[in-house]
Image (cartoon, rainbow, N blue to C red; front, side):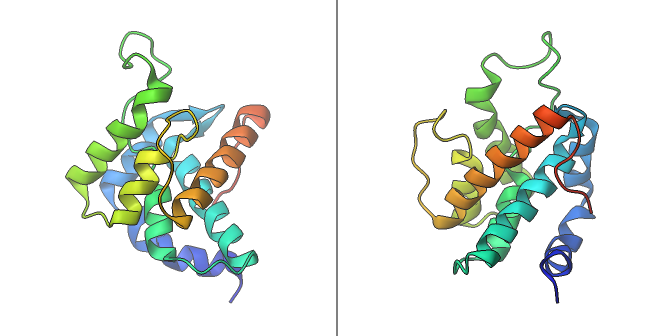
Length: 152
């Protein structure tokens, strides 16, 4: 099985979840929704780990990546967004994800620390570092090209 098919098998149950689908209502970067961005980050993370033969908890890594921007508001709206979104949205995403899902310690670490080095807490797990890198790749691509980095 190729990497994309294997990845889709991992995410299929989660992307049907109504709570996760609501991220599609909010733009993240360029014309890419939070949902599309999180799927792209999950795929890039999975791809990196597979191609580099990194042993990790793929399920927790993918779930953490899918929930890393689960903040559920439009950060582009100046009147409604919290101040210092870049510094605070990881905490909001973690609060929302903890409310709606049972999270593993790896998933908590991924969500809480995905903005390193902007947030100063170092990631604890290899899965967190991989998602952190994948997030930077995806957000850079989406900001520059104004299109999703990956689609299912």
